[in-house]
Length: 240
Figure 1 (cartoon, helix red, strand yellow):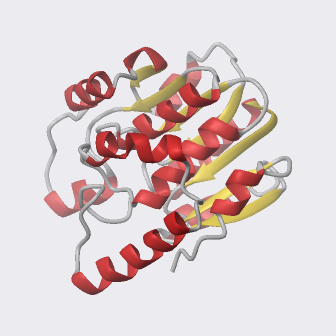
Figure 2: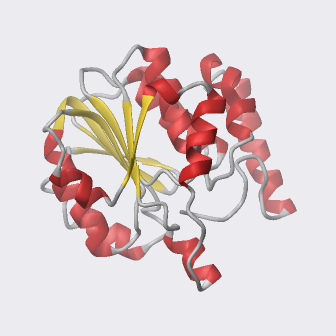
């Protein structure tokens, strides 16, 4: 994950000013969906590592991707991305979001703290409940490899990979879950531009990943078919 700050608070004045300018542009152009704007106060209250435009991408993909199947998020932390995904599947009339996390801390937070961190499981459950999406989310407290071993084979419509940011972990996540994508499915890999290990593991799995590729800020999106127009339009925002 990119930086430790709340979803609506940014680390420096200059960086914040530039980001706010870009956000104003995309709102003025009408690229941010009404359904997302309505839920922004709920999302803004959840602690996490996501810029607002990242959450819009999660919301739009969960809402707009065609086909059938589940949405799977690898790495939920306290549920900021999970809630955005849940709002998306709810507004799009799609199947449930599954999210998996051992709740032992993400790599950046653990490296910064230099010690074990308290479990984030209780805060995830509370945030899902307060956002009103608990019925739309199945939360698994486990490593993604362990969940895969007991998975029932259900197909995925959307896979969001944001787990442990090491080469082996990312490669394993992709190798396990990408083959479960149904027709029209997509994979979004977080922190592709932030961690060389994530980039390398993803690039080494290109033969497995869907053939089409798009940039979404520091993330990379791989998709099998032409993306819905709302998603294509939003991905043209000036990410910086």
